[in-house]
Length: 134
Image 1 (cartoon, helix red, strand yellow):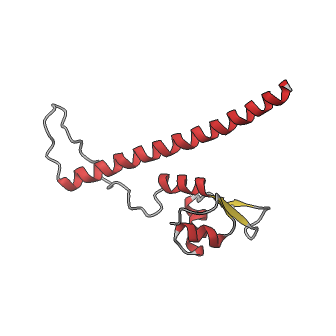
Image 2 (cartoon, one colour; image 1 turned 45 degrees about the vertical axis):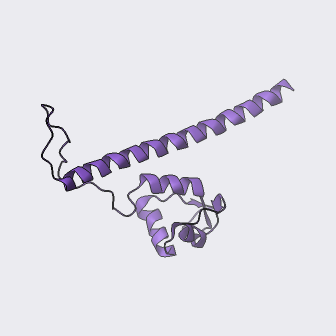
Image 3 (cartoon, helix red, strand yellow; image 1 turned 135 degrees about the horizontal axis):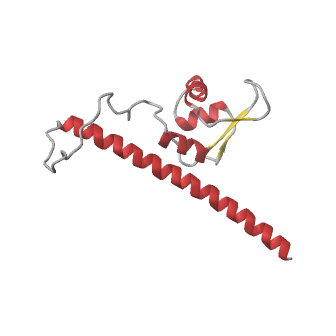
């Protein structure tokens, strides 16, 4: 993915290029995986745009490739109830660690976005207060 892009992508082609995918794939992701794409006007054929920050957040918190999904069965913990090391296979332990890692990445991404939104709200309030004091 290109890192030197504008903060706003103004077409399906730009969004697809940023995500290094085809236009039809990105459109399918919007329909099926809630890719954060905004429409100018109403209707399926209206122009679209996307914010790079929202796309980054979506990539960090979605399973767009399904690669980070944990196996269907419950994964054993590293330690058993009595404190002894569990006899889980290295593959099972790896799956558990990947699942826990993904949870942490999602939490960090969600917290970051929340803090950015709060900072913007605070900046707006500060400007409003300054305007009132003048």
